[in-house]
Image 1 (tube, rainbow, N blue to C red):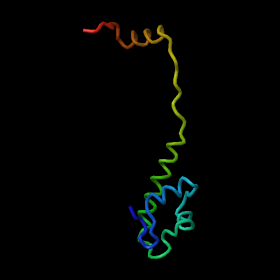
Image 2 (spheres, rainbow, N blue to C red):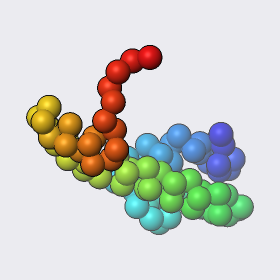
Image 3 (cartoon, one colour):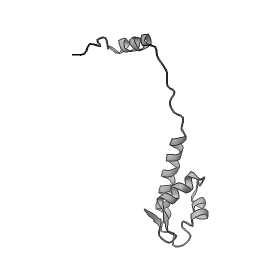
Image 4 (cartoon, rainbow, N blue to C red):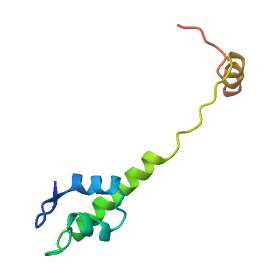
Length: 89
C-alpha cells in the first residue's frame, strides 16, 4: 500500500528500511523522502514504522528454552496434574 504518494513510498519500503536500520521518522525522511513534500503521510508512516520496529524486535527475541524430560519426569508431572489413566477408549 502506498504511504507517501508524493514520493511513491510503500509500507513495504518502510519495512525494508527498518530492517536495514531505520529507527526514526528522520531516518525514513533521509532514506525514502517521506514527509518531504506535503507531509500528509506522516501519521501513517509513523504507524508503519512503529509496527515494523515491533515486528523486528519480536523476531530478535530469544526462543524459549526447551527442556528435555525423561519418561519418569513426564509421568510425575502428569500425576501431579491428575492425569493417571493413559488407556484409549
